[in-house]
Length: 182
Image (cartoon, rainbow, N blue to C red; front, side):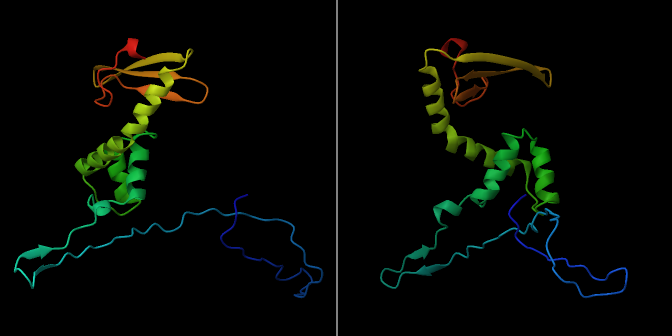
């Protein structure tokens, strides 16, 4: 059972004889109900001000903090990346989910920009895994092909006991890797 966030005690209400007083009450069963909390988006407005320098007369403007310039926080970004990456959801599916579950209307282009930013952010780790997996004397290598919209696609994998490296040879990330490089 999961750790409860709330416990409700349910005691007997009335006996078949009509009595409503009970002695020696003990718990005998726990019924668990699991529910998602209400999803309510946290929206922060950064109100930028500008003013004239009292010394030189130049106009100066407030600047959005770097970590907030994309307009999407780390948890929302991670959710969208998870849906696109691990879950292999289409951009349209992600868009529908954001609208119906989160109440967030988001364009397909914005979804793609979020995914591109995450891909760029994880590229150093991806390269490190690619380097580490190639250093073992023995690895397991496989390739899988499929057709997508009439185009032959490939996915290559090199794996060892604790590490797996997946590579789409058509991907711009680590582009130019050939089968012999794996």
